Image (cartoon, rainbow, N blue to C red; front, side, top):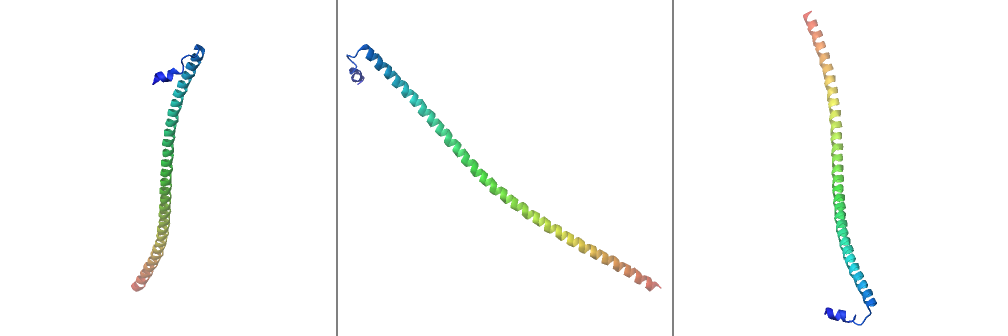
Length: 120
């Protein structure tokens, strides 16, 4: 079949044949360049898709970490509220202990006074 491709060139001047040869060489060169560019494009597209997936994964991870952070902040707030309540309860109980301790001392003095009176 290649003989049919070359057959149309018969009878052409050497100058025209030279020009045809140059143009065919240029076409081959451009085809190779096009293949290289296509390969580069496909490689860049693959890298782009990989980066795009990586960004999507990082966004998902970021969202998960934000939810976890929010949950931990709420947990810390609840612990702080519980600590404040316990601290308040402790202060109330300490106050009650101080009052009862004062009453106990007062009762002891009363008892001592009454014992002194009884001894007299």
